[in-house]
Amino acid sequence: MASGGRAVKALFCEADGVIVRLQREAKRQVEVKLAIIHEGWERLHPCSGEYRLKGKLVYAAVQGSMAFWETLSFLAGRRWDLSAVKVIAGDGAEWVKKGLGYFPGAVYQLCRFHLARKIRQCLGARVRNPPGPLTTETHLGLRENERTRASSQGSRHPG
Image 1 (cartoon, rainbow, N blue to C red):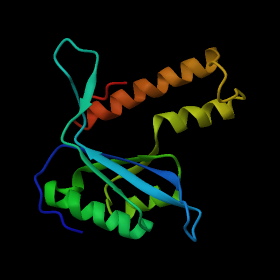
Image 2 (cartoon, one colour; image 1 turned 180 degrees about the vertical axis):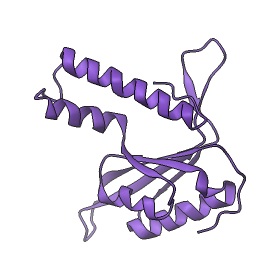
Image 3 (cartoon, rainbow, N blue to C red; image 1 turned 30 degrees about the vertical axis):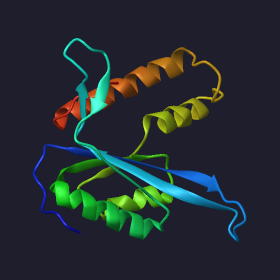
Image 4 (cartoon, helix red, strand yellow; image 1 turned 135 degrees about the horizontal axis):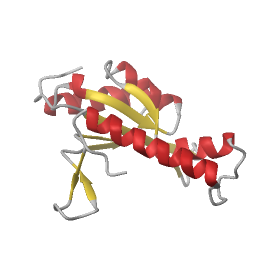
C-alpha cells in the first residue's frame, strides 16, 4: 500500500456498488464498484447552504473486492498519507467493509441513507412512510452526531 502523499487532517471514503445487466454475455449481470475519497466538505461560497467535496478522488471498476481496494489505496496513497482515512462509509455490503484492511486507522460506518432506513425498520416504520416523531428525533440526533464527529476530525459535514 503506497502512502507517499501529503498529510491532511482527515479523509473520508464512501463506497457502493451498482448492478449492471449484461446483454449477450455468459454472465447476466456484473457489479460496478465505486468509491470516492475526499478531504471533507466546504461551502460553495460563504453565504451558501450548499456544499461540495474538497479534494476528491473518484474510482470505479469491475473488479473483485481485493483488487478494487488495492488499486484504490494505491491511487489514494500517491495523493495523501493514508493514515488520515478516518471513515469508510457504505451500505453494509461485505466488500465495502473489506476496505478497513487497506486503511487500518479507519472505522466502518453505514451511510446516512442506509442507517436511517435500518433505524426506521427497527422502530417499526415502513421504509417509504413519512417518519413519525420518534424516527424524526432519532434522525436529527444522528445528524447532530455526524456534525460533531466530522468537526472533531477537522472537517465540517454539511448535514
